Length: 198
Image (tube, rainbow, N blue to C red; front, top):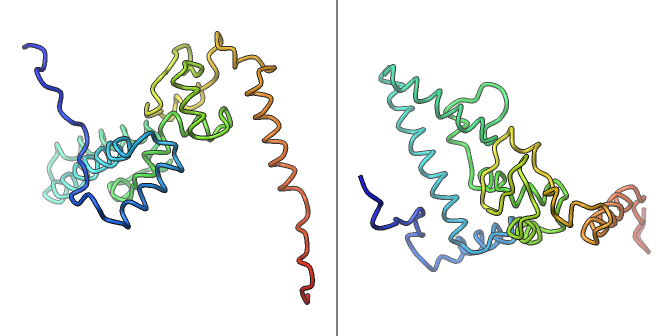
């Protein structure tokens, strides 16, 4: 055994490079999840494609009543449940086949950091992670594309040695002010339209 000589690409590119509808959908996902480039989106799509392909093969093998297929199905469902992608309860192969790219993108560390209010925007979450301000338990994580497991999600916090961990840091103050303004706008009564007949 030796070291691998060539690194292989871990994603597949689109079959046709210039499809307007696909490009518009990709742009929406890039903006929503704060991805750096389309390569990160294509990686998530390729991971999902492999998972779905495995689920379809297992479904066919289960119809043929293979014992090994039942074991592999339990392993696949367990792995995806630990990742937090499948619904809680008793997931099935149909749940795996119903997964979308967004389900996988929502398990990325940068999205969870933004969603939990530790960063003002998805791009801001990416910057905070890359600069080493976020830790998972005791370990500092600097990969925004890290897929966070269901158990690990509760361990996400600011790194104790980071300056952002202080409550007086300007980033934390701005986040609190933004959250307070958002809550105040939700609690405010709706303003009636001028000149309308009610």
